[in-house]
Structures are given as structure tokens and as C-alpha cells.
Image (cartoon, rainbow, N blue to C red; front, side):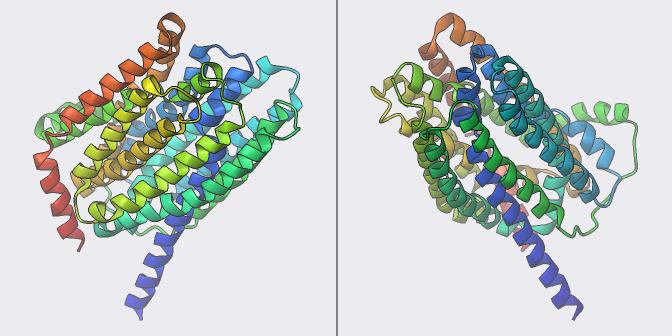
Length: 419
């Protein structure tokens, strides 16, 4: 009876994690950095450097606090209480941002400030919750089911995002005045995001390994030793670092399509639909190799797709074909996301898992700021220079991703340990 109860609880936790991902993916269609938030701020008159802050805040704010949070949680056997507390601030941030679009419809400068402030708050809160989310996921999903777990989250969530893409297209093509049309986009996004936070908050977390509390200074002092003794971690971080730099042009693809290729704003909904279909396809394609310990290969193919996005942006002649850019970028991002999490779980010893997650994600905060630099590049050199730099960074990431022999072995070992 006890074993049956444990199995039932494990299955419930698995599906709550899947529901969380479904709603996250659906909400992301309405809060997409490159296809919604960046064009929205550009339409409000924000300069390129400010537009570049959107992905920098969303990604960098998520990565930045995680080492400190990992240190604070290391001695805790359960991490879910922190996740539940941060869910409230994340929900409030989206509500405030959405409300500001309607209240300050005639003050675009105020909307820009509120949007940036709430994105920062939401991203920082998400970063704080990222460590408990990752640690709890490693507890409730065995390694041999991780590929299925991410694929279900992203594929079913992608189907929801497809519906969201049609809603987005309908709203932006409607008679609703700007910026209220985007305000209604954010209403739908806020509702789905809130459901995603609620879903994972219902997970019943099993107790995990806890380590003695150490001063934060001691944790920082241990990092050089960890990096010296673990070459696979160093190589993993190098590839992730360069791959993130390869995304620096992402917030400007839609702006390029609208401003330089003459695309109508309503085409953003079409681009969301195409990007979502590409993401769904990749999740189905990569589920089996990820489950079989081939996450290094998944990572390599995904970085190849990230290389294709800026190259296509350089050569495609019309906005009608530009959907291919978003398809490659979305597919590459989805594949990197699946492989990167699975490989980090394979790398990290159980007692140091929180530290590995926190260290890895804090280090990656730096390249996530690249879109701000990209905005400055755009002002001085133009779109095409920006696309070339993004392609070169992704090419460098792919070159280093072929030095992962030890990481392949760790991935297969983790698969055996979870069986």
C-alpha cells in the first residue's frame, strides 16, 4: 500500500510539473521577448538600447541571484516553500505591468518605465525560484524520464502557444487602439503565467540531501576548486556562455522585419505560430535521444539551429520568408533548454546540485546582458553587423561543444543510476 501511494504521489508530481510547463509555454506566447515585448517597446518609442534591456532583464535577472539562493537553500531538505513565496511576487509583477498599459495609455514614457521595472521584478523573482524548481524537478523526475518530461511540457505547451498565436494575431489586427491591443495580449499572458506558478506550487516535494550551513564567503571560495576539479563543468559553462552570446540579435529580428522589410505588426502572431510549431517539432524529435543519454548530440544540433537563425536573417529577401528565422531560433532554444538542464543534472553530485545550478546560472548572467550591447551595436553599425556577430558567437559555441566526451559518459552514467 505504501509503495502504491508513493507511486501515485510520484506520478502526480510529474504531471504537476508538466502542467507548469504547459502554462509557461502558453504565457510565453503573450510575453515573448523578441516577438511581443521588444516590438511593443519599440512602438512606444523606446531606443534600441532600452529594447535590448528586455531579454537582458528576463534572462539575466533569472540567472543572477541563483548562486546566492543555492547557498541559502543548501542546508534545507525541502525547497518548495521558497518557490511558493516567489510565485506571489511574479504574479503581482505581471498584473501591475498589464494594468499600466490601460491606465497610462497616453503616457508611453511611463509605460516603458513600468514595463521594464516589472520585467526586472518578475525575472529576479523567477531567478530566486529557479533553484528550488530545478532541485525539486531532479527529485521528482528520474533521469530516464527527463526527455519525456521536457517534451510533454514544451509540446503540449506549444499547442497552447499555437492557440495563443492566433489570439495574438487577432488582437493585433483588430480595431483596438495601440497600446490597449497589447494590454489585452498581456491580460491573457498574466492569466496563463499565474496558472503555471500555481501548478508547480502544488507539488509535494520529497525530502532531499541537506548540507551544513556555511558562510557565503566560504561558498564563494569553494568555486575555484570546483571549477579546477571538474573540467566537464568548465566546458559546459563555456559552451552555454557562447550559445547565449549567439542569441544577442534575437530581440531585433521582429523589429528588422517590420522596419526594414515592411512586415505588418499583425504578422507577429504568424511568427509566434511558426516558432511554436518549430519548438513542438524539436521537442518530439529530441525526446527519445534525450531519454537515452544523448543530450550532447541534442545540444550540438540545437546550436546548429541557432547558427542558422542570424544567417537566414542576413540573406532572406522578404518578411514572408522571415518566419524561418524565428523557426530556427525557437527550435534551437528549445533543444538547448532540454539538453542543458539534463546535462547539468548529470554533472552535479546530489549534495552539490544546488551549488552547481546556482554557480552555472550565475555565471551565465553575464552573456545574457549581450542584447543591451546589441542595441548599442545596432545604433552604430546596423542590423547586418549585429547578425554577423550573433552567427560567429554561435559557431564558436558549436566548435567547443565537440569537446564533450566526458560529459557524454556522465550523461549515460546518470541514465544508469536512475534506472
